[in-house]
Length: 432
Image 1: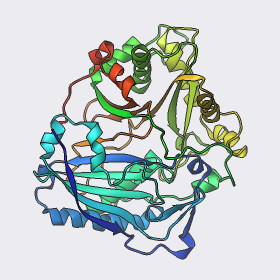
Image 2: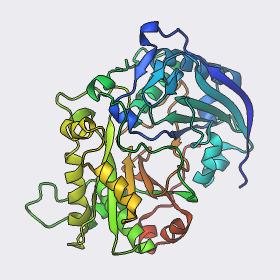
Image 3: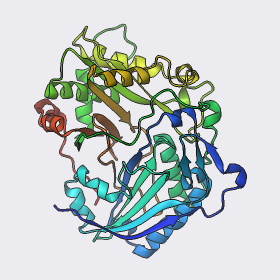
Image 4: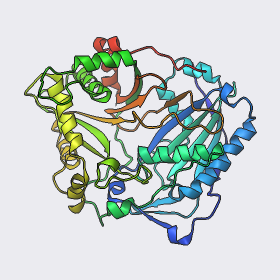
């Protein structure tokens, strides 16, 4: 199905109340500083039935007014990012677009094509500017809607994004249960004058990226957890978690499908939210990037997936604490650290595989109720870099949607792998 989206209007949404002068300068933390200057996408799909009692104009008005109120609380999102050091909280506002799609939402969701999702976003993800947040409201012929968001990763991580999104939705539906964000991350992860760690920019290179979504039902994941369990009685948790099992499986199938150079290194990385790993732990209301990446080089000493992937993954995630961040921070990003080491290995061409995983499992991705119910589906889009893997919980059950961005040639091999397809479901998006 050819999918066309026509932009109807472009606007700027400003905070409903001016940001006080003493809050005008929001300092980026050290982790913010080393985070890529790219937009991250997120799409929320709401069917016609959910919004049938409201006209298009009423929906649009509610979204814009509640966004304006939410920006008063989350004022850095209405500002402009400056020089990798701070956000000028000048109330310039959020870029906002309204658009129309030339089909019914149910038709689009019959067989969703992730490559088309970027049409539902207000910006190209590599169109890096000083804007911290942009929103696009797309209406389908049937009356269903999609809220597409592009947020500056430089300013916030997934935890902060969902804190904002669900607070915005709470304001829209008239709830008094609205979170109070804490803008103090720079006092914990103090910025450095000029990080010696090379900050990735929004210039992804010349790779042609393909994005695909693979659905793993709960029963398939349970089978993979059994498949990658160990008989070693000395292991505290001999059965891997859902995320550990899927990580091992995706790695193994990618390796089998693409057959990379066996004389080079194979590297896996995961992103870890460090809020609860600090002493004392931080509230989830702490705003900013309080997540860091860590990983490991795959061992060639064993073919056993549990000891080759699951154990090193657990060890790598366990290391992510305040000391891990401090050792990195105190040297301005220059001290030995997985992020630095891996960047250097990639630069030298020593790495054959580098797969980077991010899990949004257990995040409140389906909680955004603007007064017309929760989304029937949430989704991502094509990202800028290859070899990125994202995990999303399915709306019901214990299944996980795996979103994978690969080089087009690698994807052509990976997506037809027979063992991969034996576990993948053809589950449709339901409820529309």
